[in-house]
Image (cartoon, rainbow, N blue to C red; front, side, top):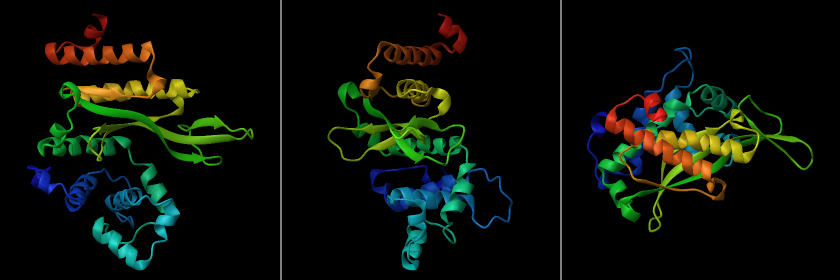
Length: 256
């Protein structure tokens, strides 16, 4: 993280965040031609700005006035012109989620070093992590092999992209911090119960692997109040714990 190696609560401002994200986005692998009109880092920063400002759509975001675009470029450190909605989709569709996922860990490190995570400890010094599903795309025409489907009352098929978000929360604090995200894909199952639980299994495994030092207190809705899910979470925790303590191969631990 270069010059951002030391952090304090005073450093955690929006300007610093954008500088930090700019460094991270510059590391994303570029697979397009070297003469591409828009740099990948600038397109990702534009997408971040759109979600940060809660713009209702990509098209609406593009229709900003010239003055607003100048402000956007200055505040969000966007180089050059902001791409149109179709251009942004084409460029971002090929971006691997793993590139974005690594930033969650980097931001967590910063928060930990600055003492923020310490302030979020709650019962028995555990960290409360709220897990819930969120839908971020829906269409009756546009779809891909990973879309989940839902039959509407009209008989038409609706295609969605959704996922599970894991967020650090505290009952006495207004700010929350995203910790991890797991996509829900068609291969997870046809029913809501199946697909969310299968995605939750991957999410819990990643949380334990990425943050083995944290005492996590997961907050989930009634969908997860069942013995298989609870038993799976307990097994995941035991496997990660014994792997750290013994260094034994995963297959051996599962057999034991």
